[in-house]
Length: 145
Image 1 (cartoon, rainbow, N blue to C red):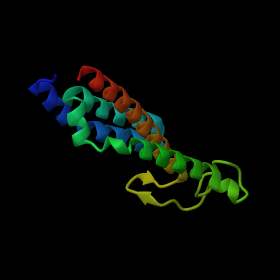
Image 2: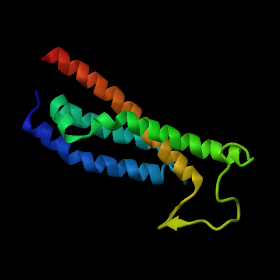
Image 3: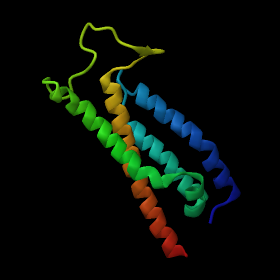
Image 4: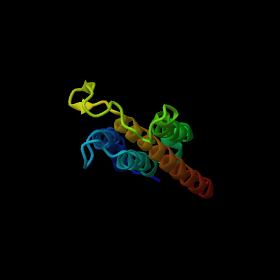
């Protein structure tokens, strides 16, 4: 059972949690970013929804059935970034553009392959952790009913 206060706090903190996860993804503790930490922070926002709203309301609010798809999409993206250079005859995880080549920028963010790799890792971690959270919440909801 949840109170009005916990429901309100859970709903109010969802968007800021995803904003922080996005900031960590783009500019983590290093210059490239940190996909793992961003995925965990975003998953904690979803966990807060399950704790604050309860299983049934959180399932209605969020499309959490897509968590495995997000995990597989992230895995596919990370593997593609890792293995596409090998298909072209270069070492695994070769960065593009190469040293000295012009870099496309989005504001101050340089769009290079490590950013794509971090996005893939973030999606993989987010999907996996949300899947685990959803499975635990579903089991607890079935036990409580």
